[in-house]
Length: 223
Picture 1: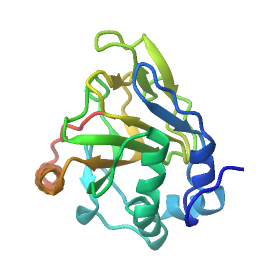
Picture 2: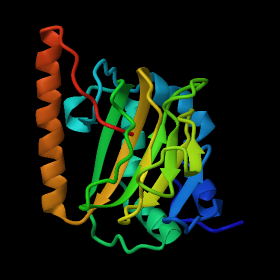
Picture 3: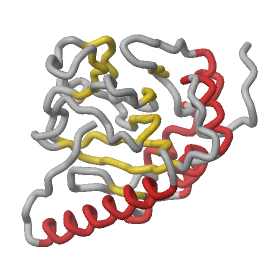
């Protein structure tokens, strides 16, 4: 068995430690069951209700205690250490941001790179099952062909994918419209980048709430 650090009840650090690191075309790791199955039901029940597309910061959401515990674990130094070791990247003193998505809209999923201020992206999915062809995240060999994938991840209960945000870390998914629950975790370059991301997501959440009051759909983001 591979030794890990302090146990975290909601996530499976052992599964992360034992999962293979893929180096090409960019460093990534996939864990099919990152959330502990014994904790998943409560976390799923406590997931925030989100009726609009796009990303929401935790400060803009209401959620239950099990989901709060999960987010606390995701922001912990223990988890940062484990991802830094697995992805072979120095994340010392790097701040973390957490955003949540509940819905995907038609325009989502186009091939893209993450912001350069993001050093590592972690996506954790919380959908009890997934039968649709769309909405399955693809890690790509290039930025011009969604079918040229090195890996595809169904957004099922507790699945996790993490990758280093290199200049060629292209990803996207085929269109899907409807509920698609996920948590995005990013370690970013510095506190200024973290603060800017939070401000952007807070403003976006306010705009979406206003549009919802007027009965207009809000544009979502990809993932």
